[in-house]
Picture: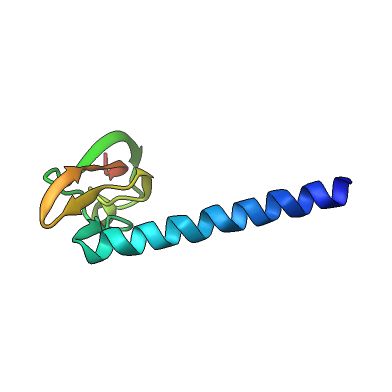
Length: 91
């Protein structure tokens, strides 16, 4: 019975993933877009800095190494800013 329970959990998880993928595709086709912030320069108009981390060089100053929560636009309007960590050079 443990094997059948694992199969049920796996099939449930697979079903939820399919529904999530379908919903995301429908939202994207209606105009929802994720704000691309990975390895970008910090932009306060679409990002919220939650913390900072030291940058190793001045060239890395204000770059985004980590995203805590993705931000989204809907038909060009900001729904939620991306919540990020920002590198700061203190040399």
